[in-house]
Length: 78
Image (cartoon, rainbow, N blue to C red; front, side):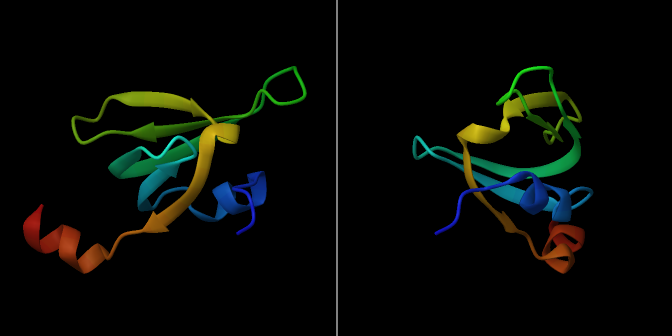
């Protein structure tokens, strides 16, 4: 599987996804907001909303992949 890159992350901006991290953890049902590019070589960060609408950032290099959620299920149960 390819690594989660900047271009992959851009395609999920504004969508609800589950984020699967390289350490095996899963961040469930978050909405990706934007990407932050830092000064250093590997300092890109992904910003997302949690369910309580609190914004959080995570380094892009620690994300293995993202799996999109079905929007009709979210509307019915949300």
